[in-house]
Every structure is written in C-alpha cells, then in structure tokens.
Length: 149
Image (cartoon, rainbow, N blue to C red; front, side):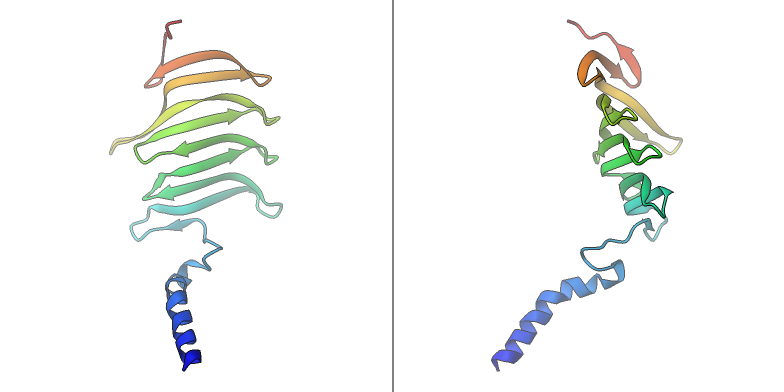
C-alpha cells in the first residue's frame, strides 16, 4: 500500500514537468522559437561561429519584444553591448570596448508604434576611459541636453 502511495505522489509531482515535455527538458530550454502568431518568444541566439560556439547575440523575448538581459558580442566573443530591457520599453544599456572595458552606460527607450520601431537614448549617459568616468551627458529622446553643474 505504501509503495502505491509513493508512486502516486511521484507521478503527481512529475506531472508539471511532463506537461512541458514538448518544450524540452526543464533545465534545457529550446532556443529561437516563435509563438502561434509569429512573434519571437524566449531565448534567441545568433552565432558568429556556431561550430566554435562564438555568439553574435543572446537575447530574450516576450511577445516579440526584447525583455530581460540581452547581450551582443564582437567576432572574438568579447561582450560588445549588454542591456536589460523592461516591459515599458526602458533599457539599461552598457557598451564595451573590444578589450572588454566599459565604454559608456545609460538609459534608452525602445519605442514600438505601428509605423516604426525606434531605439533612442533617453536619460543620463556616462562615458568612460580606462575605467574612469570622464563625462556625463543627458539625452531626451535622442537629443543632448545640458546638465546643470
């Protein structure tokens, strides 16, 4: 009797995992997938060299829009750009040099309208040389504005 209850409990606990079997094992997600209406969903990866596993970009999508941490790379695999995309279109962005040093960081917006998809800097941006901030600039919808000192 106890053995039967143990098996029943095991089946109940494994059922959510088995319900998602068509999406891959729970710890190995499928990549580059579309939803039923053709929008990107989940993790997307493009490769500079698939054989050597050098990524061009690794992005995450929800309903066809970037969401969460996304990264772009130079051809040698060094990180070029990283951003964290929020639901409302705001993005916290960091650009890196080919040697991997932080070059600039700030806030931007992805604007989605029926006419266009547009990326624009919007907020305070910091520019770096040799790891030190050398300049701050504020942008409003892509236009540079003066920061009072």
